[in-house]
Length: 291
Image (cartoon, rainbow, N blue to C red; front, side, top):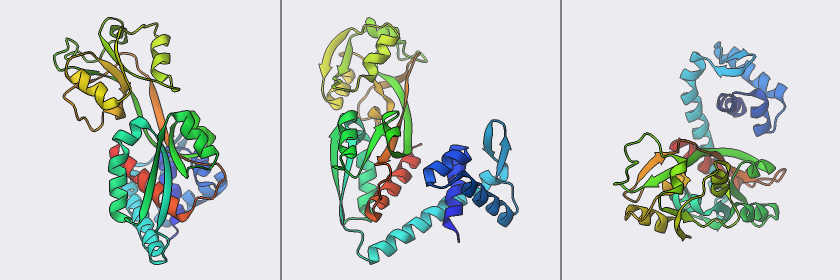
C-alpha cells in the first residue's frame, strides 16, 4: 500500500488543486499528478474532472473518498502505535493558541488526544496572534494556531473557517430577524471584548462606518456572554467563540460579515518531530470532525 498516493488523493480532493496539494505535501506538481494518474490506472476509475476552472472530484471519486480517508487514518494510528512501542510517545509539546480558541475548541481536542496518548504532555501557551507568531518564529513553541494571512508565513494546514456573528439576549427585538444589522451596534448597548493587538472587529466596524454604543468592555469571553444572557447588551465576535454554546443567548449572522481562516502552523523548513506530528495529525482530524 502506497500511503503517499492516498494522501495525494485526499489533498487534491480537499484543495481542488494539484499545485496546492503538492505545496502542502512538499512534492513537485508532476509527482502529485503522477500519483493521481497511478491511482486512476490501478483502480480503473476517473477520480477528478479537469477543466479550465481547476479540478472537481468525480462521482466515482466521491464514493471512494471516505474509504480512502479511513484507510489513511488507520495507517496513521498503526504508525503511532509502532512509534509508541519504540518509546517515542512520551514528552512535552508546546502549543500556542489565541485565547478564544484555547477556551472553546481546544479542550475537546486535547481530551481526545490524551485519551490515546496519556504520556504526552501538552503545554498550552495563550496570547494575542502576533505574540503567538513571534514565539513560533523564535522556536519557543513547537506549533501554533493562527489566522490568515499571519499563518501564511509558516508551513500550515487549515483547521477551520468561521465568521463574525452577533450574540443577543433571548428577548431582543432582533431575534426573529434572519440577520443582525451591523448598523444596530451604533444604537444597541454593546458589550465589547477588549482587543489588545488584534483589531479585527474594530477594523470591521470602521470599514462599515459604525461607531458602536459601548456599554461595557470586558476581558473575558465568558463574562461577555453571561452579560448578554442577562440582557445587558449585545456583542459581536467570531462564531467559534460561542461553541459550544454555554449561555442562553441567540447567535445571529450579520447582514455584513467578515470571515477568517485558522491554520495549524509550524516553522517553515523545520523538521517536525514524530511527537509533534502525532499531535498535529490528531488536531487536524478533530477539526475535520467539527466541520
